Amino acid sequence: MITTIRGFLVLVCVLFPALAIAADPAIPAVTLTTNPDGSADYSVTIQILALMTLFTFLPAIMMMMTSFARIIIVFAILRQALGLQQTPSNQIMVGLALFLSLFIMTPVIDRVNEAAVQPYINEEITSIEAVQAASVPFRQFMMAQTRENDLNLFMNISRTPPVNTPEEIPFNVLVPAFVTSELKTAFQIGFMLFIPFLVIDLVVASILMAMGMMMLSPVIISLPFKIMLFVLIDGWAMVVGTLAASFVVV
Image 1 (tube, one colour):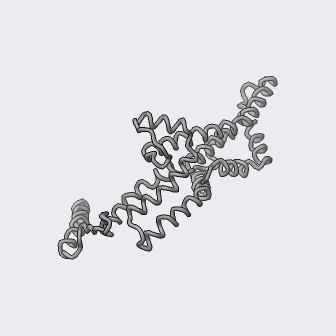
Image 2: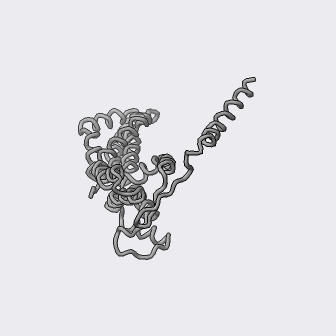
Image 3: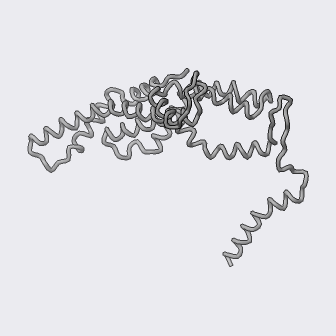
């Protein structure tokens, strides 16, 4: 009985929108408007559908085209260097990385709002022109963080012909080059953070070995000293400030 009711509800949910559209022939499926310059605009319904589809790629865009990847990797390496497995928790680290990314990307977002969002809302430009205008600030931000070697690598792999200006580099080349550069930079920062805590681990392990306390884990003894050192030097402010200053915002 429950299976029958569930099947009936699914059938209603599937058929009701189709019946509603069929009952109202005034609802257009696709409306194409030709502009005086020869370009074309789709109906608002299609634009909303495209926007909702774009939302599915929003997490990937946020991680691969912003400062989020470098920040979250450095935080993960820092937690590992401290010897803390679950503190701070993943939720706190991701939340801090998100808000720090928003802080760093604010100039880029403001430029996107001025160049693309507001003109599109005021119907001064088309949707295609808005997307093209919004891509320019992100392109400039990624170009400022990307190493030339990484760009050349992916241009050679994709067999992209040489370009005269950075604006001619396609996104399918710029994005992986940017991500590769971010990973390298994040690991460089993480290496510098790891060294002081590694020295503390080595000192504690050597002292325990000299005392003959082989069965006592050095991690248990070194953990309070690493936390104390990190707090005394105001480690969180230094790490967050260094990460924010490591980005070049043009």
